[in-house]
Image 1: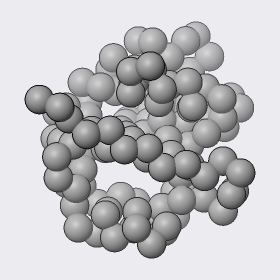
Image 2: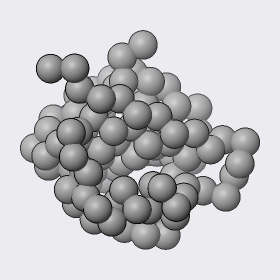
Image 3: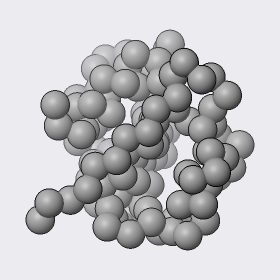
Length: 112
């Protein structure tokens, strides 16, 4: 399964997913593509796609600061570099939710 399909599948199942891309432009392109595939019950607000069951998929640049207090279950990294604070929050678990059964960590690196 390709990373965007995996991200959509997890979010549709009720998980909170963060997609980190290399640039804000790349994140916006991925966001537009994902919203086109999200289904009729999905809603879009800014860089966030959400579903009625609480699932959500947020897109951002790996160089941007992540708003703390927005717990997530899954991180998909598609960028070569990540902001130091974001990486620190990933390593310490600050970004993850307190729901251990759903806690996951996905990393996809570019092959090109």
